[in-house]
Image (cartoon, rainbow, N blue to C red; front, side):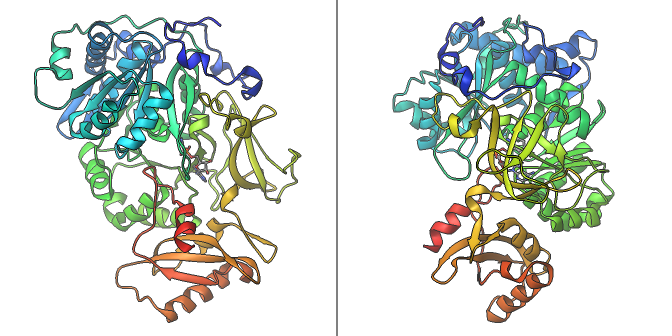
Length: 537
Ligand code: 3UK
């Protein structure tokens, strides 16, 4: 196959074509030429069109125009190629909190025809080592504040020879090298199917795997969900919490705003306090964050109601109907829910504000197809719970990993989610297939019980799991974080059980409830039900 890559490691470890999903390119906006470098399309195009002076990236104390982001990305690309010896196809690890320098570094890697391997800031040396090993990382750009764990990982062999630090002091810093490089760079003439990012995912359970995405995939996700569902404008200001190392954040906070010439606010820390402050300071209009963050932010409704916010996107986990209602009540804004996956790069089922339905994720995004099927791959009638499978212009390609054959079957991507399709064509999330609880022969979706509990004013957060039970096989057990000041104890347990029975079938009532101070979550905000199950053993 034709490619610009001199280092063919990723190309040579793609799944064989008969194990890849079927791709759909019917839409007119998905007709890509053979030559494609997504950095040219997302960044350089705006300067060429005379929009170089528009604001592009912001952070506390920093405002970069499109021209400034381009100049910084070009300088870094020159450092990568001329000082660090990066060649097309090399994997360059990126490690930094969300920041303008991380955005510039990301574009530099893409411009150089290399492959960006962005990593979550919270990863420790052990996890970084497996990223370096799986992706055969040769070079890294790293924020000095996060250098320790990366240097530990690099010291341990594995082939990572060249680590350049930024935001630090010293004459060997990236900034010093940038200052002696030019701000002009001719992007490598990559082709549409050249890999440009490796998205790492460990799901909610464990062993990491790398998903491969092409320049074409990056442009395809910009052409689908944002245009049909988000419909943001060039004067919008994007803000949010997901790290750029999580493809939810990469799309929402970098690719999508730049694809339409808008601006983005990159916050190093994005808890509710920083988000609130950032929304006010930068007059942000489009927010990307996870359901739990919306719950926490809703307490500041009066401030948000009068803010510039106009569009709010929730993904990463199922959006409880209670959280949707709470946000609407607090801010007047209807949330845009969407399910995406690292394997698919971004969102493939969603609904805009006008079409949102409480309890449903939405319908298949234009460009994608989605079905609910049984174990034999037979499409199920409306109302029946089965496995979700999807296909579209993007899809799963694990780098040298046998799990490819379980995610992709018969050309479809199986996301590992139990869903049902209703009579109106809306997809309703039930559970991760391995989180489904079976109690006395009944299927119980944890999210449904959690939704019911979250409606109770004393409940701040909760997680529901199946625990072994002699009589019933499993029973539903709820781990509940109470709001400050709410009483724990036997009486509360009974009150919550009674409350749940009012809204869902009695067999779904959690037969056991424990009160906890916090719930285990991944850095991307997902509840780790397997850890709850383990701690119950
Ligand atoms: C779950 C959801 C119900 C679901 C992601 C938007 O989350 C993202 O990617 P991951 O690889 O996880 C994928 C899994 O997460 N999920 C995500 N969103 C929803 N479940 N409703 C939702 N709205 O189990 C899915 O299979 O971490 C999300 C964009 C890009 C992403 N990578």
